[in-house]
Length: 109
Image (cartoon, rainbow, N blue to C red):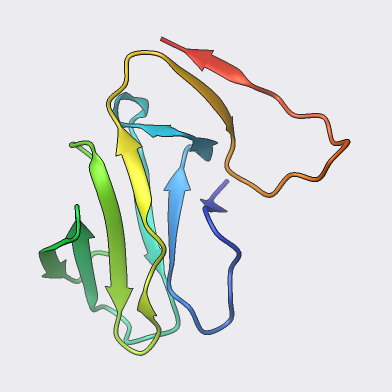
């Protein structure tokens, strides 16, 4: 399922990632989705702090490593998501964890 990388707020823009693992790696075929209650059909995307493109798509498959954000007019800029291109990563689920909970780790090559 979709998993926000930061707590969702009713009036904020969120950038969701699939699959929901952190750190997020490019070779995992990551899809990012911009969600917010702002203007429908208008999403401004940022990569590495620079305006990247504006279009109607709220979702796309990431093809390059970097730091991504999206902006939905009316709800503002999302928290950033870093997509890495590391060859070896130890991943944890991209969700809030509480002390004492069991967690599954993934070692990926």
